[in-house]
Length: 491
Image (cartoon, rainbow, N blue to C red; front, side, top):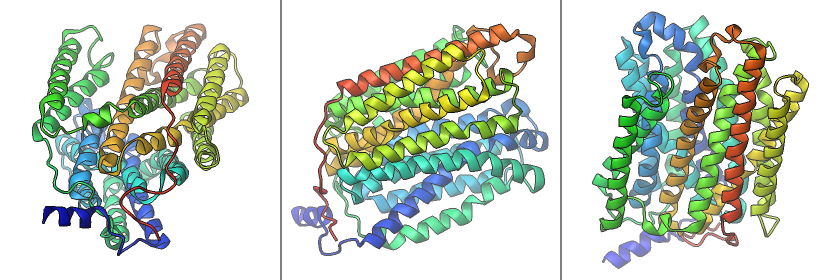
């Protein structure tokens, strides 16, 4: 009986998906992913308004931190859960959790409730990031899958641009709660779009179980690490006992999690996945690349305002070069992968180009014109963007269908963790060279001191890209599968 059930759940050739159904699913999951991405950027312009109306401004950073903590910690859990119970119920659960958090946030009477709502949002949003890429991996063979990575990069670019504009407009002209109310109809639309076609996706590992203790250890270890990265250098000095204690506790729990992976009958993250050299190198390269990119995106506006004298709105417009360059690089890479044998070289060449441009930017940071900065940042985005499709497709191509969700969840988890680490590292560099975080009070420092700080920030980001390049060089290159192995989803 079990074997019969397994055969029916692994292969559903009698109900293949049409191209229109595949496109509907991809459109729906990207819409849900856009919701989660928007909520990382849309709140920033409205935060002063929230603080004024809800009070307790000292807890304002937790509006961002609360979302980041739960989104990062939950990402790998969703991959495993979707492998066991199927994509449709898991992605529905993620959307519903995200919408519940949006409802709590929109109706928050005070800052504490708003922070709780944001944490609930993150618990759902972390799943939407991982599941969007996992579902695309189910539908499209690896050789064709890379071009959809450009769609994912475009989704992030839209969120990066539209989020601050919508957040500022809602807070200034309407009401801050619309930032969260808008998620409700969009989330319901996404669920309606993907409802019927998602039923045809088979379950690759229905009879497996979730390791609850392993999940708890992973969430706790990640939360403590992210707290240390967020508080270090801002709330507490990096060498304070508070930060040291958080890091020590995180290290102990990470050790317990590793021990659990070795001893559990069915670990949360398969040792087969973790031991795969392609998965290790691919996730590490994306982790380092994301650390450099997000750190650069945070401190580039500060540079544009303090060194080049741009206003806040002008610096936001000037960021378009980096964002659009990243999308263009991902698009080029995604369309080229299917046409070449040694697809890894695309990312290696792109990252090398980005390192060169970032090195030049660090050398001319003190006296560059806006035009030069725009050209260099666009080229940095163009080069680094090529890695996203290559790393994603390489990792997904390296594992079988039963472990696709886990591998994609690990990739998403390390990408999010890289974002937090990159901001923390570049923030420590900024403070070490006398540049206050968020650019406040920079008029008190001389231009030479500011310029030196940004030289070191850009140089540190370049060093991260060098390490990402090394990981790509060491990553084995496995020929991409031209057709999905299982389940059978042929037209």
